[in-house]
Length: 442
Image 1 (cartoon, rainbow, N blue to C red):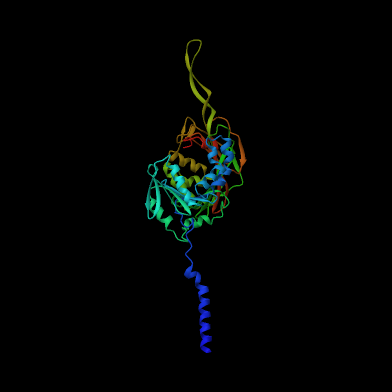
Image 2 (tube, rainbow, N blue to C red):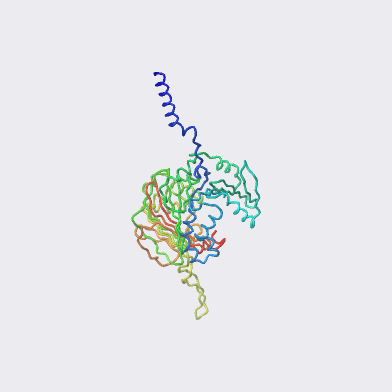
């Protein structure tokens, strides 16, 4: 009887152990997700194709973009279904400074992908081969590759396909890279449909830990939203307000800054301070003297023309045919150039240093910065005003930190939206029509 009870007990324990540990013996290891497979890059990001297509629909139709029907939400969705691509989920992409890039697209039905490749073959010479039991397609002209599995499609353009292929194909569950893991955990731009993230080394060399970009667009302009996180606390902050020079339609370059720089001038190890020194060395600019004299307000305008008085000598003949020289003035058009700068009692030290470095010089009773036009210098309260015209420009109080830059005819506007000790938010605005003109932006 005792033996029977013991046997039953042993069998019960064995059965319980079997039920508890069964998953560990019989369950297959979960396959890697598409996020686990993602290769690193200087720039990485995600794109919700259908959402972006929907958001840009008005832009495309308002500007009468050719083939806009091929970029519509409905057409893209139908093509995705036709060729087995799950574009209702995000597409992940990566790229490097050298121009290499790639993307991983979720797959819903891999049996349909070959139809899409064969369609591409009507327009491009595509070769295919077998790499470790997987079919790989190669477009030699662009050094581009395509391969796929039952869950993803990989597109890659560059010279490191072998390492990218190994990373994507043989990734394991929870093998996601630290860079992608950090990006996907970010709260900034979490609900945006196109986001770019970077920890690029060149940014880190300039004190920036992370930069992120997202987009908004309407029928007129394309807005690139930017977020920057600094490695160390920033030693500048936004001022309540300061003087701006008023702009007009002729303005081609503009910059407005209203910053509290008291901490910055005391911290030469600050990344921003070092950046000013780095670029200032190119023209021997006296950064230390500039920051000691500057009170954080700067307003600059360039573009169009202004009227300036020019003195000249004219020979005059009297009734007795005697020739004499008379000094006269006339108004002439000169390139529009205005700079307004808030300063303190160290401004004379700065001016003298600029003269000593050859950055500023005096000609014909006026002043010139390097290759600028001749400028008249005057004071307005605690501001220095340099202008190419003879008139005093109109000014206004503003707290905006913004600017305009014209790149080959494209008027790009940018602004600093907010600034904290470690973070900054900004925006860049680009006219849509200029973006849509082929090969005319850069």
